[in-house]
Amino acid sequence: MTALIDVILPVFLVIGFGYLVSWRGMFSEAAVDGLMRFAQNFAVPVLLARSIARLDLGASYDIGLMTSFYTGALVSFAIGIAGARFLGRTGPESVAIGFACLFSNSLLLGVPITERAYGAEALSGNFAIISVHSPFLYTVGILVMEAVRSHGTGAGLGRVGMNALLGVLRTPLVLGIMAGFAIQIFQGTTGLSLPAPIWDAMDMMARAALPAALFGLGGVLYRYRPEGDAKAITMVTVLSLALHPAITYTLGRFGFGLDTAALRSAVLTAAMAPGVNAYLFANLYGVGRRVAASAVLIATATSILSIWGWLAILP
Image (tube, rainbow, N blue to C red; front, side, top):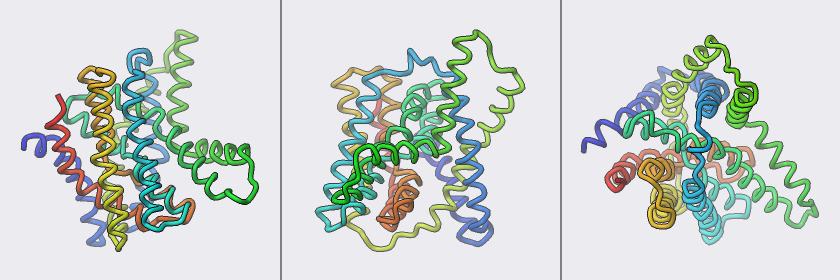
């Protein structure tokens, strides 16, 4: 009960406050869009750049950590696509639904919950996962979607790959990640550090990122009220909140023998609900939007209890 009250509840109260004021008309859709644009396009990329620039890359990038997390993600993606096809969805719809099973909310939920549970010093594994999360998973999602969409049209693998690359490189989060690695390279090769005022400005932006994004997420979720598609939504919720972290836990603990800090980061990140990016991906291609939107909302609400369970299981 302590974990529920002290760790999980504050994060979801901020989301709930954003949901409440949007529901009551005290925060307009335009205001929500503006806040999320600030958070996702500017503040969160700065947070990522700052965090990755300060990562101890040698210590943070553990092959067992990455393999445990991303094996669970890819298995959930494959099962999500197959399950959607079994439910009678078209190929592109199935990929969009599968992407909702693939893309966990590693940043807006995973980081604050891990930090509240184990402290800021426990986040190196989270940021190691996040540093390749959007680039890798968007590349996988776009490649599969473009391959499915181009099936029978004669489009070559080169064109499919170029569409995937351009789609990934246009993402602000990816640009923030690339900026973080660029700072690492600059400091490592020159022995110089960025001037203190730049770090201070980045720190100010970074501190605003998660509260703004969580509050805005509440407003975004208000729009995505569930409408039908119960079987598909249930499938996405189960794969995201149960299967993905279960695979990650099993591989991490028994396959790779991850240390406690790495296991916590991997499993908690895997246990997060689908992020809003799941809806944005579906909206980009105009398929599976209702399932993706409703799954984001329902899985986010359900994750209050599932995260509590994973916190109890983790050492």
